[in-house]
Image (cartoon, rainbow, N blue to C red; front, side, top):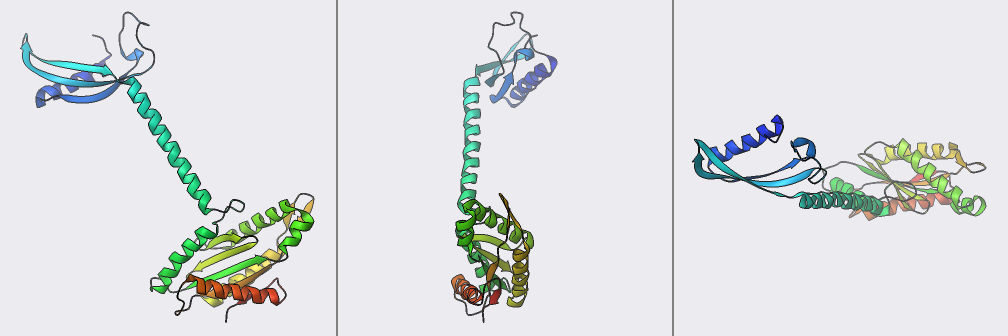
Length: 266
């Protein structure tokens, strides 16, 4: 009498469920003003209203019909509070995810930072040292005379150089490789499944690409060069830092040899 057929059928279905089972059933539902035939339209609350109902079989009949009591209370305020809490929970989860991402990503170049890189490096080192992977190589890259760019062209130009080189490195690597900013003008490139000779070939290509790259800054373009140190896993390496130390030593050798070049560890 008071609802459209869709809602009335749904109510009757719940009534029959309670009668057939002989037990009280509880559930929530929502009704809007358009769902109810109200001869005194405008006298009730506005907007969608949420209800919590108990359908109680009474164990008696009236004129041959079994009776139930449909007991409902308006739970709209509680529902809206739960919706707000859920929205806040999702927002907090999003903020948490963003903060975690910020904690692991270099703010300028948008590549992994040193902390994240070392964590990945440790994982890959454990794989190769326990025989779950066969090879692992590391390249450490340092931009030559970077301070000169900051001093003569300004820090904005230096920042643009770092971002451009980070993009170049990411575009040059495989999906399995990891490019990270280790600090300042130094980048690390982790190469899983790569031996020393193959890593040296990659380093050679990187030296050329960096040298050929034009970095667009306000007022013109600049160019940079890079020195690279290359090392690969050895069976007697105790930890990732021994491998990193050899890559660092090779980098220093490249610097001492005139820069704009690469060297690999002996």
